[in-house]
Length: 521
Ligand code: MSP
Image (tube, rainbow, N blue to C red):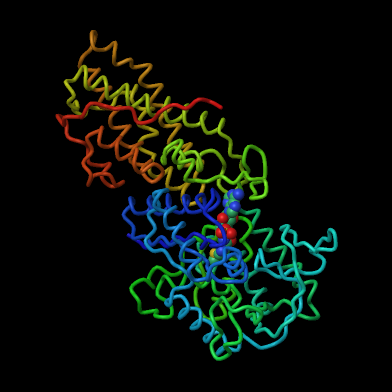
């Protein structure tokens, strides 16, 4: 048994939850559930990012006090976690006292190590991104300058504390390239993101070789107040990304490193979207190294969804509401589709046509039918009682080749966050079983070879138990129902229990359909 710590980004509360939020957390949830079923101790964290100018402005626009506003929106992210079936062990809010204490402790530690100094900041700032941009990154339209993200920027000039980021950049580069498994390695995946981060730093080091302090990071603001106060200088609030990133150690008990939770740090994987990779792979490990703390082992960046081929945006009015999707298709089919359709790490398109095709073809036709056919035959031809195990013949070998390798095969994919390949591994095993049932034709064996019919049905049952067991992290409710139909006791649903067969003679309940079909749009 080992410990595993997985995190989602903490979500901005300037807006209500959408598909992007549900997606990052869903992937994290599946890995967390998997590791629990594998017998490990897991800490899965999500939460909300509630400070900064952007949230302050959203509260103003809503005519609300920022705390009341964040209380309200934060709750909608908690509700999303319930609706989506997320199994997070904690939900952190950056406005909580425990978090403010952690931020201030980290700041004090950095200051005491000489990693922070007071200066003045001048530059282009985008409130929407809560980020600074260089002049060469900007474009101008109608007299307004825009960041590459499309956010408008404004010139700000104010006193500011700086973090000595520049001096840590060479060390970060060294760590990105350490061999896999090296304790100091910062693992960035997919590979393309790692290269992107590396060349970004290399370019910076080249451009500012003469003036390395230009690579330092402004980490406080005096132009607004909605944030964590800088210890000893309350005119300043902390830069929202320093505040936000700290959440990952707050929840592990920081600054109390004797806390029970601290055993989980460093995190195994920070799940993030591709837009926030730099914050997690440059700023965050640099803050931690500077404070003498270990950094996370791995950062995985997923891609972005478009909706029926179009960029998702509020102005286009095509934001996908995860709650509406779940209402229409059911939770588990939505969970399945999101992780199955698009290789995790790449951009992908959401369309109702693709959704219906996936669900009909793989869940209703392949998996659902297999279960229904097998379990109906056991009801009809075996009196609803599970037949005994029997030796595997050569004809059974192919079926079991995929079944026996299933847990290890899926786990290897999940350890790479290759959710789509993990599901492909299970689906190819299910296709194998559908081939097996067609060739063995247990319905015909009833008249010709009753003994073989029993053996075939038993083998199919054993195979389906394995499929349902490994699919639990993806579709918890439906797979619980499938395991009920297969007569698998509730305490025998982890991976280790696959070695313990369901006893022959177990009475199985009458089967009911697990999945429904949808009109292809
Ligand atoms: N608050 C910061 C994260 C701080 S973490 C210390 C933040 N919040 S966010 O609410 O704007 O975004 C959260 C996540 O949603 C990001 O990982 C982002 O990539 C993801 N998505 C937003 N739109 C998306 C899509 N259209 N598709 C997939 N994910 C997208 O950033």
